[in-house]
Amino acid sequence: MSSTLKDSENELSYHTNEADCKWPLPATDENKMVNQLDDVTKESEIKANEILDIIEGISNDLMNEEKKVNKAMEVFSSNKELFTILNNKFPDVHAFKIQLDNNYSALNDVNEILEALHNSGDSIASVIDIMQFQDIHRQKIERVINVMRALSNYTNNLLSSRTDDNTRVSSTRHAASNLDDKLLSNEDIELLLTQFRN
Image (cartoon, rainbow, N blue to C red; front, side):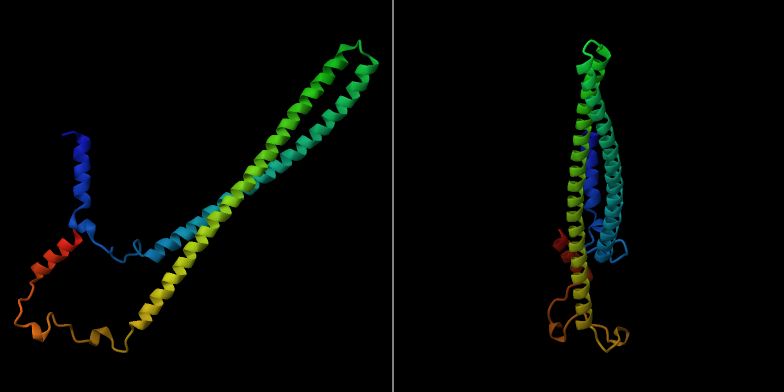
């Protein structure tokens, strides 16, 4: 038998042990449903704010770069006009023609950079929209928590009693009318519970 198959069988037997299959889980701090949901919403809000802070920083950087690119575009446009005039007046001076071509090329590059910055800005706006959906989901979870807590409080109030549980008489294991019937032993009850679980 391969080691992978043995590992799978060991994993299966581990998870089918009776101790691992207790359900519902005990009400420890780690297993309390509302605690878990509170942790999820709190961590979700913290991480969402961190992401939004990063996005805001990137957006500010893009706007600053866009300003620089616009200034560079003004310089290249001015140079293009100047070298166009010089090239027309002095067609034999090749340096003017070269600089004119260089400025045309630089203007094309700057336009491409500006378009890329605009596209990045649009992408950031889309990310912010998606983050707003994530925040709506967090609010839905919080609403579920509030409903669960309200139901829990209502049930606790509904089942509350003026009599302290410590002063109550312990419950009988069987009704008096069932004395003639065959009573289940603890082992029988455990067997029934095990069968029910399976």
